Amino acid sequence: MTYRVSAGGQYNCPRCLRALTTYLAGVFVADACVECGGLFIDNLATQELMRAFDRDLVGIATTLGIGKGETLPPGVIQKNLACPRCSGTLAAVSLPSAGVEVDICHEHGTWFDANELPKVARAYRRRRRGQLGDMADDALAEVLDGRFRT
Ligand SMILES: [Zn+2]
Ligand SMILES: [Zn+2]
Image 1 (tube, rainbow, N blue to C red):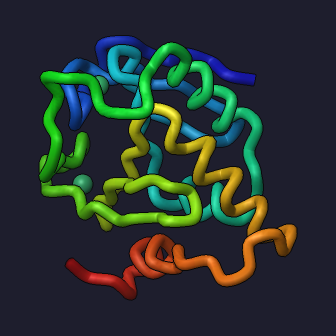
Image 2: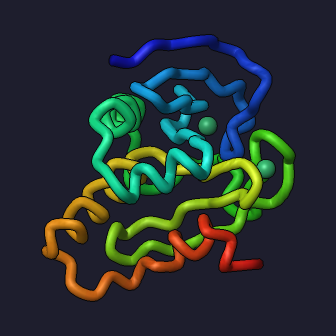
Image 3: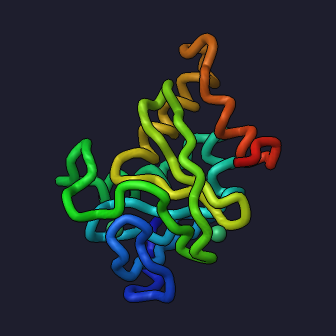
């Protein structure tokens, strides 16, 4: 079950700087950009996503990504994205098995561009099922555990 909590909230999209819309997706809170289709979740939610496939969260990310391309739209900020909460620079972390690069604030959370979150969720599900042998993606776990520092 997904609820829209507020539109035009206090946080802005790191890509296109529009106000993010807050959604409750199951137990998760997601700050989503309806313009570019990206969303920000806190790092506990990202850790949970690595452990268990969450239909609510994947569902909302999929809905947001409808009609959004595989590449970033023109005119958005390309690199050195700012955390929606603290404006600190997000660290880009490559996840080869999912074919994406996510952007992380150690303090606050993870930014997924349009359609990235479902890919990450499916990659971790494949890994849990043993369908991905040697996942080269431990970078994400290390980042979220605080073992990785930029
Ligand atoms: Zn945006
Ligand atoms: Zn932050």
